Image (cartoon, rainbow, N blue to C red; front, top):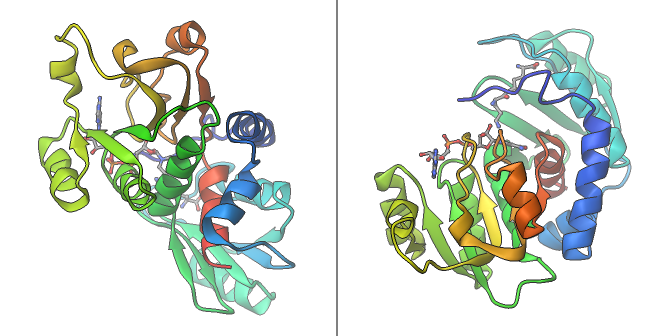
Length: 265
Ligand code: NAD
Ligand code: 2YH
């Protein structure tokens, strides 16, 4: 699993502001508005305890600091524990945390200690980015393309199906594509085959969740499309973004984190 790097998290406040502006322009709601609409919850005076975790590859420089910046950006109160791991968890609870945020190399979780609800970053990220794609103000139909059907992409595709969208899916891993077709009734769109055809289906809404660049080919792009992608690096090239006037929502940690928090309020 790809780990975040301090470079990904550089200028996290600026990245959040830019994403908030793009989400607002493309959907009519800001990021908090999307999460409120999605979960029907709203943040109050919850205090978020952030616990650095040394397991596996260890502490990522600026990960906890970025979480604190994110929590504060969205108007919640938060703190980072002085100690890591089990000692840090003890410190978070005894210092009055209502919600604990912590991540190892595999799982990034949010746990609400008041109501026992718990959230995992991958499905929460998939769901919120899929929701953003589905709210495009400019889309004239309900067709949405999902590229990447892994731990983030599959729950996002499932969310779109449940919302009544016509979901087209692609993953280079044919087993994952087959699973999405059989379990979600997603329409398969083999982009390798499509690349060889003269006319391919074009999309105004694209949700991309892969760890690879250039996964979104030109032939699927509708002018003024909305590309909502948590994938790092971005799957849409800068050239295509400009050529098609695409709105691109892409941010490394904050949008998924707010989705986790709102899902457990
Ligand atoms: P995953 O490995 O479970 O899934 C990725 C999927 O992409 C795989 O199924 C893979 O086969 C597929 N894929 C790879 N190349 C492809 C291509 N060219 N075309 C189509 N499919 C392709 O990973 P994941 O946990 O779902 O994470 C996906 C991405 O999202 C990663 O880059 C991860 O770092 C990122 N992520 C971002 C956030 C955020 O907040 N921005 C949060 C969680 C994960
Ligand atoms: O970046 C990660 C993993 N990819 C899991 C996230 C799931 N999207 N983990 C962060 C590890 C943080 C580290 N243990 C710390 O600094 O506390």
